[in-house]
Image 1 (cartoon, one colour):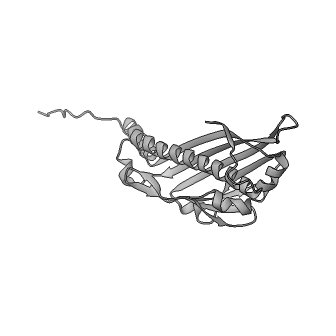
Image 2: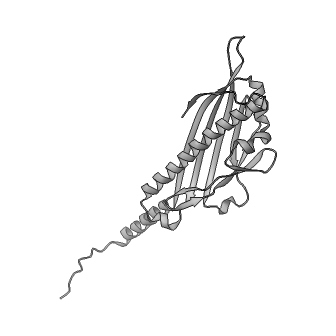
Length: 217
């Protein structure tokens, strides 16, 4: 007399499907895809051509305007940005990535990330896109000219997760990582806006002159 097992027998095809689903879940937990977007407008009391000349000379302003990031000059139009230590849940990184500032076209300056030697071995990828569009506003003849800078920043980040984070709830890891990325993006974009505006006024010998933040989102 045989005793039937109480454990259900899973057909081979169903078992294979379960294994594939489990493997896909593990792969999904092994990395994160994150995004951050920040844009705004700021008004400066200057004509557009003067501001254009200043922005074209990025070799003179990029190193101190990107503080507290460290900037390494790679060529006449490319740089390596080294971030400070950031992270959460016991996992920290000091990320860096390369950027190129493109020649301006139609009053628009663009910055994009570039691949550097050794990037393929890093546990993260950063795709950065930013732009500055200059618009000279119409005003009365007795008032100084005003140029509005429309700027935007977009980041796509791929991050490989260490094993100890993969055992935590994926929603928790994603939420904390997203909070860190959004906070750093907001802080750095606001600081860069302030630094560039302040440095521009210093360059035209108007230190301390105020700029007007129109909107940020």
